[in-house]
Amino acid sequence: MKITAPRGTFDILPEDALRWHWLEATIRRIFGYYGYQEIRTPVFEHTELFQRGIGTATDIVEKEMYTFNDKGGRSLTLRPEGTAPVVRSYVEHKLYSRGGITKLFYMGPMFRQERPQAGRFRQFHQFGVELLGTESPLADAEVIPVAVELYKELGLTDLEVLLNSIGCPACREEYQKELFSRLSSLRELCVSCQQRLQKNPMRLLDCKNPRCRELTEDVPQVTDYLCPACSEHLEKTLSFLDRAGIGYRLEPRLVRGFDYYTRTVFEVINSGLGAQNAVCGGGRYDHLVEECGGPPMPGVGFASGMERLLLTLEQQGKFAGFSSAPQVVLVVLDEKLAADGFELATGFRREGITTESCLEVKSLKAQLRAADKLQAKFVVILGEDEWKDGQVSVRRMADGKQWRVDREEVSRFIKDLSGREP
RNA sequence: GUGGGCGUAGCUCAGCUGGUCAGAGCGCCAGGUUGUGGCCCUGGAGGUCGAGGGUUCAAAUCCCUCCGUUCACCCCA
Image 1 (cartoon, rainbow, N blue to C red):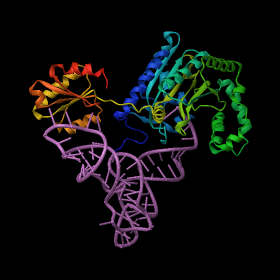
Image 2 (tube, rainbow, N blue to C red):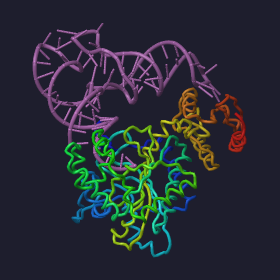
Image 3 (cartoon, rainbow, N blue to C red):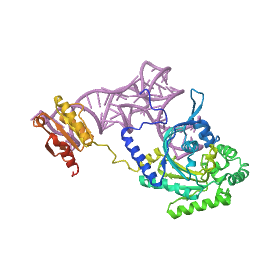
Image 4 (tube, protein in one colour):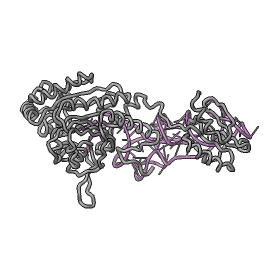
């Protein structure tokens, strides 16, 4: 094998495509119930959008973006995430001027140059929703069940919602100062935590290093530092979730990797995925629209990884029954009848019968074996015996029953039979 | 970017203390029925043993380099 798909990318083969179609269709259907409308943005954007939106100090912007110069010397970047592009489009087209609240969803490939791992790819697919134009905690509370109920509909089990509030810039700054003063003297923190302490002290709360965990054990929690407004926002969000019966776990150490988040942040995790256990991540971003050149306009949303969902569903045996079996396989027994067979197959298809036509005349045995492998419901056999009487044979594969039928009546015959057992 | 595991037929793998070691199962194709699938039987096709280099009379088997893949760290969906 000379040329393979680039590292971290993969082909979706026909049998897999069925699963993707099903997943995509389910997402669209559920999002429809909640009133989200699809928006499609380019797969690449000006590099600056992500630098401004995600934050230059984040890992994604620092080392994971596919950035290149086009022939005009512009710096472009394959989108590493979906929120910044959606917000860019929202601002560019002044969607806020249509009044009220904007509810959008997107779905498509994203690109990050990381080392591939279980459930992690360089080209991967996400869908997500963005609810723009309101600061109400009802919006935070609404966005979470969009994901949760979708997962339920997909048949996912063993999921957990983790939730936290990281406050607004004002209360967060005070908290970060506190963290810094408590921890900056500690030499025992791991190397990356030393760096985090300088750039974004809050990030070291979710370090997995056991020693760092101990050292930060009794550090105060973000939620203790929330200003009255942020505190009230969190309270209300939680009470709405409680009221609607949406389970969650308050996770004070949950912080997220993008700079744009404010107040509510959350994740949905699944234990079956190994280290990459998050299937969904999101939160509120009250200053991103402004950052992107729009008016002050709050927003909240989430993104979810499709590969990880499919992986989990696969583990749960969801796709056992997925197949694309044809209703009819046409078998032609003699080269001389090839044209008649072709005409017949075309007729079936015009009648809406999924038909596999006979492209190569082989022994009846071989053709039946092939039909069996395709899991055909019926085989229509066209041989000289039948044809001289203006007929074909229809064989029901499930029980091997066979009928001689006039050629003009085959479509009707098959349709009638299809409704019945077996 | 760092570290570990693995790279032998389409797939899953055995062989790996160097010398019938190029194999098994499944899959594929064909035959056992003059026009009848699934089970069974028989036969067949298919591999530069990831690539390159080295050690040796001799390497899939030992050594080195590279590539790929996988898991973990980092980070994240």
